[in-house]
Image 1: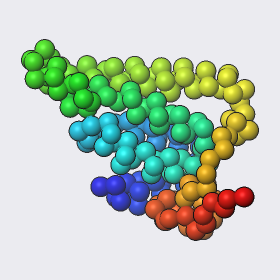
Image 2: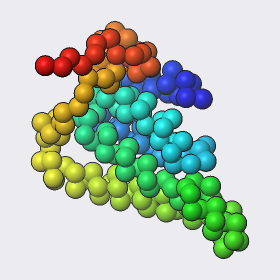
Image 3: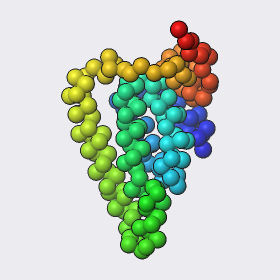
Amino acid sequence: MIRAIFDSGFSHLEGLPWAFSLAALALCYFYAHYGFASLTAHISALYPGFLGAALAVGIPAPLAAWTLAFLSNLNAGLTHYGTGSAPVYFAGSYVSQDTWWAVGFVVSVVNLAIWLGLGSLWWSFVASGDLESRSIERPVSCLDEASEIGGRGISQTILRPPSRLPVSA
């Protein structure tokens, strides 16, 4: 499943404005949680690839990393199995599965409107529109090469190990 997402899904983002790509990646990342039984499994399987794709299409690194990090927590309430405490409430028959999924979806739409809608306005205000200059220092990794695609496709860039290693001084 992961390979299929990388090979076919991310290639459609090439050439699109980065803001549109961020919205598409955020929605796909968020709602992909329906297919995972835990937050840890979801984050471990998808976060690195989605972050690499975000960087490869030109989304500023801090914005991409923080957006995916926030959404990694907000998707917990989507299902009755989405996070550690949810099965306890579900097994106790406090909430039916239909109700949980319906309310979870409505709350997810509200959360996305707040975090991606109002939140993006707030981030623009805080960053004063200059997110690139606020990049954080990080070790050399395959994500460095993902931001410089060259003639390669996004999926080939993300899934390839780095060709250079950090050099100590």
